[in-house]
Image (cartoon, rainbow, N blue to C red):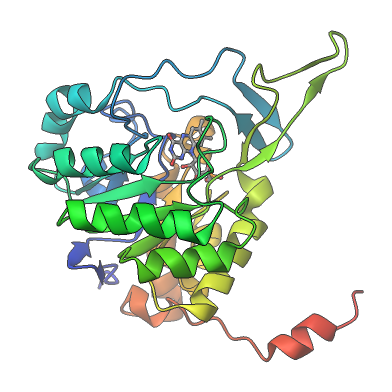
Length: 315
Ligand SMILES: Cc1cc2nc3c(=O)[nH]c(=O)nc-3n(C[C@H](O)[C@H](O)[C@H](O)COP(=O)(O)O)c2cc1C
C-alpha cells in the first residue's frame, strides 16, 4: 500500500508535503517539461508586486560552494499581469497555488491581498517580508512591531490563508515569529536567503552588481533546520520549510523536525526533477520504516535534553 502523504492545516488539504520555494520555479509553466505540477503538494510562485519591477542590475547571480548568491530584486510584471496571464494556467492543474507577494508599504501588501482574495484558483498567499535584495525588503521583518502591523493588515484584507516568510537576518527572530503568529498568520515560511558576497579578484569588484546577494542552497540547510527547530519548540504553528533541501534525506530531516511542508529551491536550477525524486524518496522511507502515514514521522525528533546537547564537548 502507498503511504498516505496527505498534509492538512489552515483549512487546506495538501496531497503531499512537497512544494517549491518562491523564485526558483518560475511563475507559470517554466518547469512543466520536467515536473508534473499536479503531483506536487502545492506550487509557490515567484514574488508578485503591485507594480511591474525590472529587478536589479546584472550580474545578479553567482555560484558559491554548495549554493548560490542571488540579487534578482523581485523582477516581475506586476499583479495585474499575473492575474490575467499566469493564474488561468494553474486553474487546470490539480494542486494548490500559493502566491508570494511583496510590497514596499503596508498599503501595498493590503492592496495585493485584496486583489488576490477575489481571484479563483489562489489557495493561499505567502507574504515575503524578508527579501534581502530590495530597498525596503527586510524592513518588515526587522522588528516585531512592523511585522505585526503588516500581518494584521493583511489578515483584515483577505479571507485566504497565508504564510509569512521570515529571514534569519531578523535580529529578534523568535520575537518576529511570535508577533506574526499573534497578528494572525496561519503559517510561517522559513527561511529566506542570508546575505553574502563574493569578489572578482582580477577586476576587484563584487561578483554581484548589487554588492551583496542572498545565499541559498545546501550551504544554508543546517541554519534553516535550526530555525525550524527553534520555532517548533516555541510555537504551535504550521511551517513551510526551505533552505537547501535537495534530496529526500534532506526533506525528511525537516519533516522529522516538524515541518508541515518542505519547499525545494535552488536545487531546481541544477536538477529540475528534484521534487519528483524527493517525493519518491519520502514514500520509500515510509515503506521501509513500515509507517502508513507521513504523520507517523512529522515532528518525531528525539531530543534528550537541550542542556545535555549544549554541554557535550566537541570531538
Ligand atoms: C534565484 C532566486 C530567486 C528567489 N526569489 C525569491 C522571491 O521572489 N521571493 C521569495 O520569497 N523568495 C525568493 N527566493 C528565496 C527562496 O524562495 C528560498 O527561501 C531560499 O532560496 C532558500 O531555499 P533554497 O536554499 O532551497 O533555495 C529566491 C531564491 C533564489 C535562489
